[in-house]
Amino acid sequence: DDSSHKPTMVTCTAPVNIAVIKYWGKRDKDLILPVNSSLSVTLHQDQLKTTTTVAYCRDFEEDRIWLNGKEEDINQPRLQSCLREIRRLARKRRSNKDSTSDMSALSYKVHICSSNNFPTAAGLASSAAGYACLVYTLARLFGVEGELSCVARQGSGSACRSMYGGFVQWKMGEKDDGKDSLAEQVETETHWPELRVLVLVVSAERKPVGSTSGMQTSVETSKLLKYRADSVVPGRMDEMISAIKRKDFAAFAELTMKDSNQFHATCLDTYPPIFYLNDVSRRVINLVHRYNSHYGETRVAYTFDAGPNAVIYTLQDHASEFVQVVRHFFPAETNGGQFLKGLPVASTT
Ligand code: 2P0
Image (cartoon, rainbow, N blue to C red; front, side, top):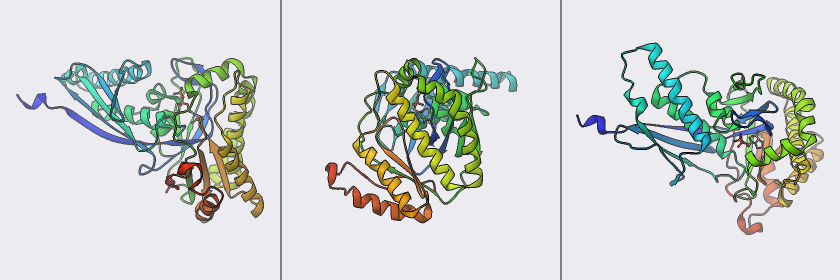
């Protein structure tokens, strides 16, 4: 039978999410359980995204993975966690459903090909889209349904939020086994159609300190991080959810900027300190505040992850004017054309 030698394959895409209440710090490194809840906006599929193809075939001798065309080590613990969990769920489902069904595919090895349409590891949430896409694609291939954000979380914390569109919270949970540390949609992608996201690419280089090791050093050394997790974020989560539900842009924007600033303050409070923002990032921050005070209302918000690139939230009515303002203050010829590459590269609609 020739057909059984042919690979069976599935391709899916998953978009990046940009947090407005930031995840920074784990209480359990292996299960990836955070010290605080977080909340993000998932971009649209046609913007910043990962595309992943997974195939199985009885002739494959080993599990293998290629990222952006280059083969990577399949034995990374987080990849192994995701593969193990999906195969376990698939086995459970098949044995519940129909004991005579063909289980052989579950013993076949997989080949995974994944690529991003944006710079990897430049603080643009590549691991979030990457692991969300991997878990979702594996689940489709093996016929697994249901709650998958707990599996994606074990690949990369922020990945659990990319399993849903729109406005998504990652509830930190209380249990030690992580079963209640999962993503939930707060509002769908159609809830706030006027909202816009602009990504200002300050640098497409790899970040000097990765998120995983950076947040671990923060947990070990920063008292501000503990204060933030215990006393600031719980209230901010409630306020943010309420602002989103009311579509109150000023409240949403102010919380977003304050939370980004506090995240970067905890990086500075880490010992040795971690610097993700650069001079261009700080000029963007100042520009946003000057722009808002010029109009006497909060029309634009910035947020920065583990890198210098600015993500701007604004509303449809103000987006093109703000782009013009940014182009004026950061003409493309400065910084060797590095800045504002392809602006605006992302929006939520
Ligand atoms: C976030 N970041 O909430 C925060 C804001 C960066 C700053 O999630 O170790 O790649 O894989 O769980 O998810 C980046 O950290 O870290 C991140 P791991 P992850 O989006």
